[in-house]
Image 1 (cartoon, rainbow, N blue to C red):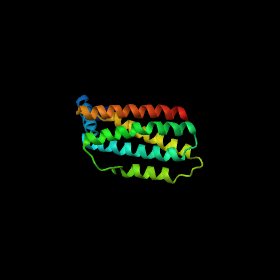
Image 2 (image 1 turned 60 degrees about the vertical axis):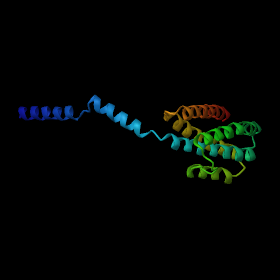
Image 3 (image 1 turned 90 degrees about the vertical axis):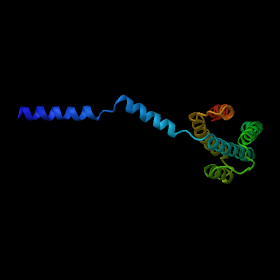
Image 4 (image 1 turned 90 degrees about the horizontal axis):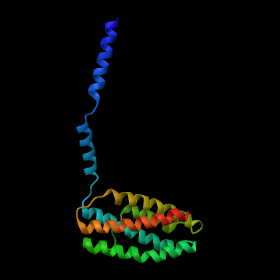
Length: 171
């Protein structure tokens, strides 16, 4: 009877020992998942253009509907900065069409456009903070080899972080 338990214990240890992944397998899995996250530079730039178009649209809608004078002033002052950034991205990608906003960003803009003016400030801040969180994550996760695109990405990232700080302090 003792030998049966001993054999079962030995067999169990053998299965557990064989089931562990090796260090090289872990490293390979990590590398594979990192490479899958990379996008083509032009596809990433098109996504950034879509995000900038969303921001410009959101700032225009917000500047018309918000009741907080400080927020309205901030939106109007920073709108030209976003428009200039969009112009630089479009010239880098050689994009001439003006309607490249993604479907998700279009839906979010539509939600802002139809939102009731009563309590709009809170709705705007909520949607915009969510957008900033998502966009900052996408921007920081991307690595680009092209110096021009990388420079644009970094400058856009600075704008996003600046806005995040403002909106985090706002409410």
